[in-house]
Image (cartoon, rainbow, N blue to C red; front, side):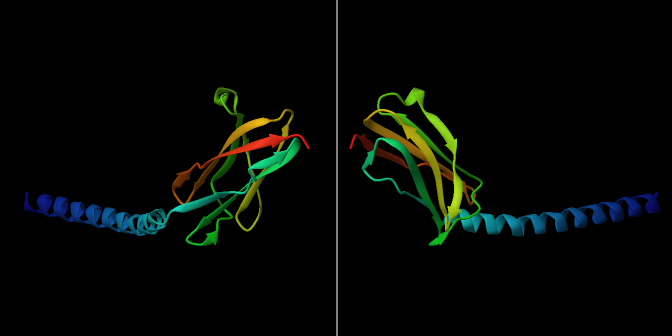
Length: 137
């Protein structure tokens, strides 16, 4: 009986030690991710307040801790005419350089438009809103 109890205690000790080692390496990775998530991701919409009618390049600059983010999990731009948010279009943006992501969008009529730059990076989701005018030249 003592041998069986000893083997059970020894086996339990081995299992707990193995679980503790796995938890420690996972915890180290979590600490790095938590440190990144404490520094906010910043998104700067690079769209003028007045834009000419036609095909327009809509851009967003993504930075983290002052450095360009070139590997964001998601960057998309959602566009709609003001007052018609339910008719928005959401388009995946392409990274072009130094943390700048862009899409091309065709505006067929002048008016006031709004957009969200949806960005997921460094375990954060940021979506600044920007309003601009499409004007006839």
